[in-house]
Length: 254
Image (cartoon, rainbow, N blue to C red; front, side, top):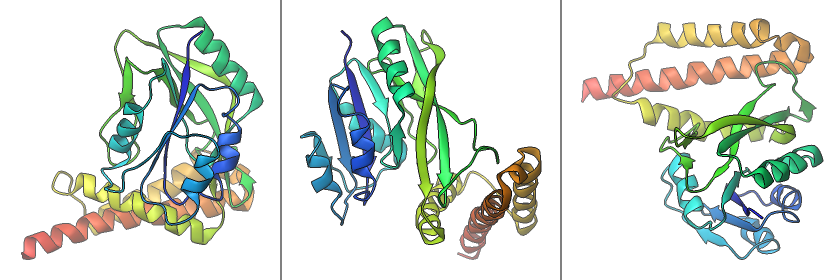
């Protein structure tokens, strides 16, 4: 029987971690958790489910932190999950069946995300196919600081799994602000010196983001939540391009 190892990178996820781990602990062979320096009870919660807990608080970016976590796994298959995600019963069965076939493939899961307590079915959020199951020796995450992806051997084919991976993304607006600020900074860090920006570019990208999310991706079908999410996404887009532009101005002055 092929073995499955769960890969998690976490920081201050004490509220949600137990629910996540409860959805996988009964059917996987190993759970590896790499903590980035939590100040809440994240590590204590993790200890209830696994002894493979490691602290790496020198943050190298999401991609490299996942690589570090994978280095502690010894299973044949890797299933990557985040602390705010829960595996549905249908997805669990699909993962077990896929691993039993031992196919040379990477497998994508369909995430169904909730924001502010509401499941989002449109807005470009759903369907949301993302590679999360792959053979450990033939694939790993890239080095990207944010929005990291799995890079696989060319011999592997791509397949999809059945069932949802439930994603509880934003609890409230304060949580949204806390969560996005790190992503926005990482985006600008990754592009500083390689990509140019301007006030007009920031406005254009923000406007385009809203139009795409609310109209083209049918965010209006998510009701008032769809409007709020499109507006917040436009604001975040403006923020990151303005951040990049301001850095350019500071560099030019120096």
